[in-house]
Amino acid sequence: MRRSILFFPFCAALLTSGLLWTTLFAFKQEDLDKLANTKQCAFCDLRKAELPEANLSGARLSGAILSGANLSRANLSGANLRNAMLSQTQLSGTILSGADLSRANLQGIQAASADFSGAKLIGADLVRANLANANLSDADLSRADLSGADLRQANLKGTNLSEARWTDGVKCLEGSSGECDKEVPKAPGQF
Image (cartoon, rainbow, N blue to C red; front, side, top):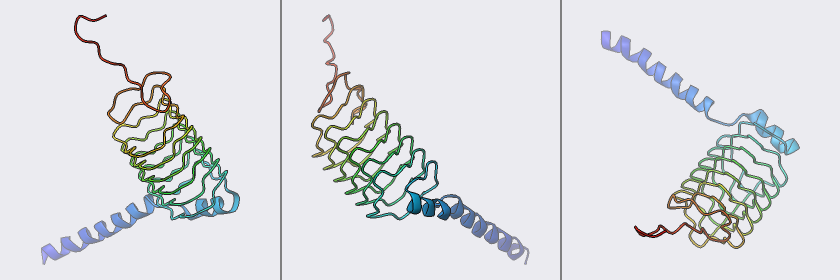
C-alpha cells in the first residue's frame, strides 16, 4: 500500500513536468499571429513552428527564436534574421537570398538545396549545418563557423569566406573568396 501511495504522486509529477516542458519549448501563438499579420516579429518565440512554404520575404525576425521550426521551401528572401536562433531548423529548399543572418545561430540546420545567394552570414554559427547542394554564391560568410558542415556540391562562387572557420575547423585566410584559402604549414627550418 505504501508503494502505491508514493507511486501516484510520482506519476503526477512526471506528467506535470512533461506538460511544463512542452509548454516551455513550443512557439507562442500570439507571436505566430503577429508574424502572419505584420511580417514583423523581432525577438518572438517561434520554436517548433510549422511554416513550410510560408511567404515571409522581407520579414523582420531579428533576435527571434525559430529553433526546431519547419521553414522548408519558405520564402525568406530579404528577411532580417540578425542574431536569430535557428538551430536544428528545417530549411531545405528555402529561399534566403539577400537575407541578413549575421551572427545567427544556425547549428545543425537542414538546409539542403536552400538558396542563400547574396545573403549576409557574417559571424554566423553554422556548425554541423547540412548545406549540401545549397546556393551560397556571393554570400558573405566572413568570420562564420562552418565546422563539421556538409558543403557537398554547394555553390560557393564569389562567396566571402574571409576568416571563416572551415569544415575541418581550420580558419580561412583573410581575403578567401569562393574557396577557403588556408595557411600552408611551413616545414621545420623554413622561414
